[in-house]
Image (cartoon, rainbow, N blue to C red; front, side):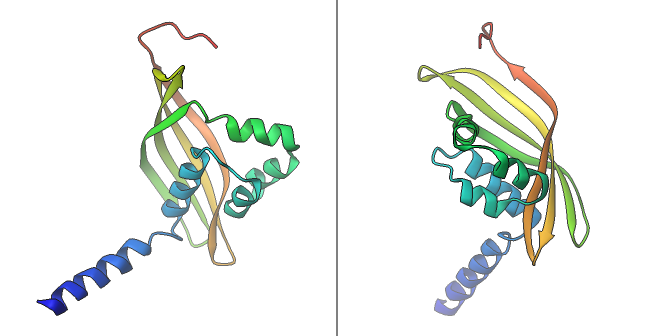
Length: 146
């Protein structure tokens, strides 16, 4: 019995950790980090390459702070992958992300965005190179004011 528990625990650990450097795992980590409150330019640069990395490098401190704080009123609800097209070095993932917009402590409306992310394998590690919006749906019971 003891051996069975150890075996199952080892399998769970191995399979649970295997998704860290997959395109899906890297994209999920990037999205979770973007929704975090304390974003750091160096950490974002480490997760990105290509066009996205270039855009982050070009931002001055004020522009980066605005970019990082752009999610302060958002609460991520759902992330799901719709389509994945990958080869050895490049991966395109179409996904759906849903989040609530919070103003004055309460939910004002829900946003659902279909996006496509491009990832590239660099030195054995997947990096997010670009993210583009495809379609946005906003669900609100009240009128939305900026």
